[in-house]
Length: 203
Image 1 (tube, rainbow, N blue to C red):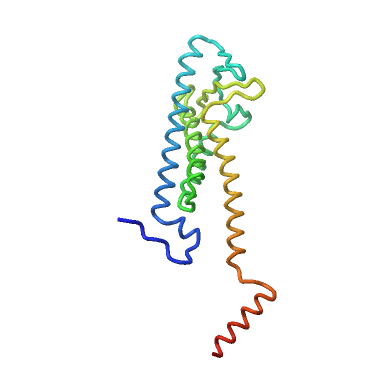
Image 2: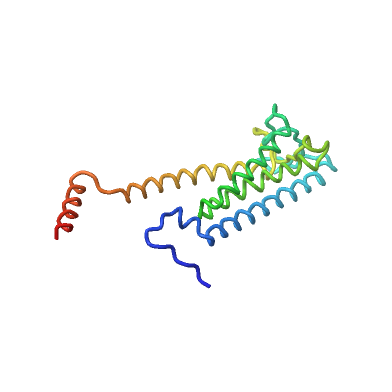
């Protein structure tokens, strides 16, 4: 059965909340999150299996593969209670779930998925890796030498957050432009419009 077309004059928010849009955005977010989470966990397992066993550093030119067990935050940011990152991850997932029904942009869905998959990837390390929840050390292995060592989950979090910030700026600008386009004319045009309505009423 085909989807019912939106009624004339429906706002972008009304269209965004249609079930078909919500399902599409939710599906894309879930698929991207699952794929990024899986990629993160697979690459971490490979890093532990190869780099730790051989205790080697793989030089790939512009960056190295170097195993590092990180008890801190993303990009090895120190000084915070490790359990806080679990709380932050839960908050991120809740915010994403609440935001999904309010957009029909698949680009935002991809960004939400990257952030969610990355956050879940790192919190899984916090829960399952030594020394255990909530102090489990996150596996990092990508080293650009001039930047703290990070992992695939960190990449998803940062890239997704940047995409969300940029896309929300675009959405905000489009909404302002749409509001201006729908607002009644001002000045002489408004006076003419009012006069036309008065003439029509008298007729």
